[in-house]
Image (cartoon, rainbow, N blue to C red):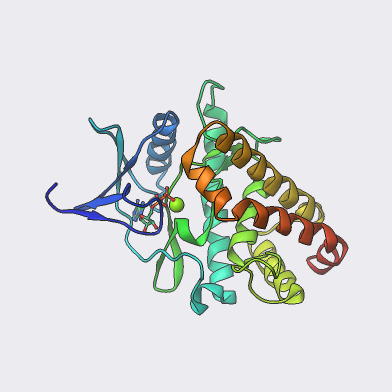
Length: 260
Ligand SMILES: Nc1ncnc2c1ncn2[C@@H]1O[C@H](COP(=O)(O)OP(=O)(O)O)[C@@H](O)[C@H]1O
Ligand SMILES: [Mg+2]
């Protein structure tokens, strides 16, 4: 196709830029995600892509968000305190819009991931550096809404901290800083967002539950023939998540105390 440029950083050979739009594979949840993105735009949220429907090749069309997107290993500027503050503010802003959608849910929607309870907001589900555009050293736009689902705010916040600090076991190549430094950055993210004492005290248990639900999902999908997840497991990602859960469990007391 004319003017079709492959975008890198996600699934290989499947995501393209065509002029000011992005073309990605659609799924059974895509229609419900487009309704959500349309609602957000009507509410004035210009930091998410505009949905333009599904084409004859069963691909979704979205507006192209300006900026740079980074993946692991993250460059130094993505690991700074300023970036933690910026990412936390963007997630807070997203939730202030996404919570307005909750009263519109019919329970007939299809999502990739199951709802998590109590439902407070629409969770992005994968609020990570590789799904956020950076403009002038600030977290600016949010992309890749495939994992959107209803859930508690902490469900998204804990996972974001796992990805942005990144708060991972030292055995994980994406991990950054020692435990003390990880705790300090997690606290910075939580305080910037405005998480209260109760939310903070649940941080480790919610993150462990979030990662466990991810590993269960990976195993289930791979067992049902999902090639992306089979490759993920072969690449050692499942083992890394399980190792990160153990790391959190081992250090639960020190982390909970340190982020107060
Ligand atoms: N709406 C968008 N605006 C700008 N860039 C995008 C958009 N959607 C995807 N991209 C680019 O394409 C890359 C892969 O897209 P993504 O949708 O995250 O793939 P995957 O679903 O495989 O994770 C991203 O890293 C980003 O650079
Ligand atoms: Mg992505």
